[in-house]
Image (tube, rainbow, N blue to C red; front, side, top):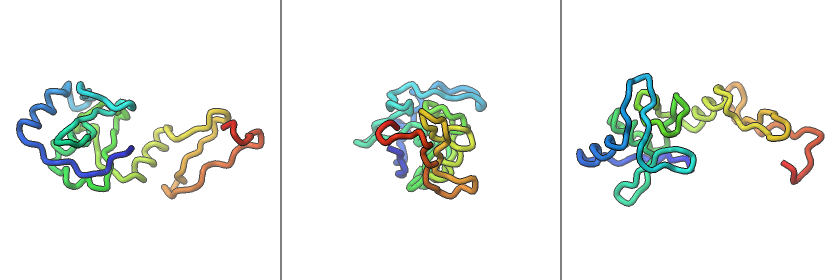
Length: 141
């Protein structure tokens, strides 16, 4: 599930605990999350009875704007879900994220046809998926 909730303000002790789980490197390099990870590779932090993505907390700690994340995503410019480098993160809408995915060639593709089935047009508007090819049969997709 994509997380779009605000993140809590961390105490000094929580911040130290967070950064101990990060391999801090140069600003042009990914900073791998060393703690627990989601099945898709995103770092996870359990904090005060809630679960948060590590990259959202990193963005919040770096910018001091965690309360501004309600309704927004934090996306990776490096496309590495385990990266928490604030230099590789930016706040975005779901539409921004979808456009970024299509621009980088990570849109959905049919297994059998290889046809792009992006839900965005070139102008960023949502559109229905590409119609199936004539060889497509129900239940085989």
